[in-house]
Picture 1 (cartoon, rainbow, N blue to C red):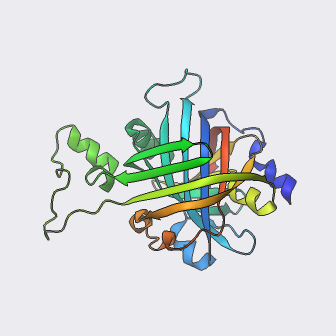
Picture 2: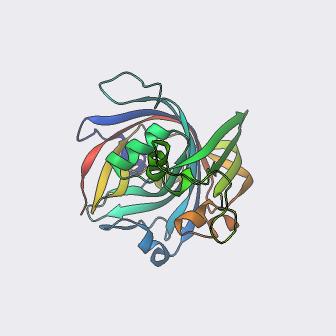
Length: 271
């Protein structure tokens, strides 16, 4: 079981890569779930993947470096960003094990626009930051009240339409909520268990785009995975994507990958 899953994402891309990234300081914090509880959250044509007897959903966080859109050189505007995600592990009828993002929160506006328009990945504007001191990794993401509601709507407002001011009141008088999350872990020793590999090595992204479900292939070398100790995990970001209470207990797994190079390419239409 271990070796096929370790090399699952190392297979050649079927099509030319559309983006290439250097990922750094990747934190995975997933929880076990009943598959039925996640079925409504994944794209049509996919279902929650069963790993070690459970479906899985959780939080991940990482830093992108040196983003490229081949055949062009690295882009300064897309080059480096922090991302904090809420995600569900998925599988489709062809047996491709992927991930469906409920949200990808980042401060990189060009990436948000491109992801919505081209990929179907639900990027949302947030003040996302990362820090590392020795083996301690910290991520914090807080959504901007106006931008977080919908990035395209916010950008349209910036180009001339009305935008609700930051920190303004809704009609009922309540302050508009700011969804966010904070995670801090201390990376430990290398682990090579089948479960750790299954949770971190996915073949691609399952995404809703218009009326279709798309599969974007992901390629990277076999990962060096490390255990981690949790120091802090809190926030209400899952509330924004229909997964309230996700962060209320300790993750059922906690893993760190120091870095890898990831390539994405078009897969096909799932349904």
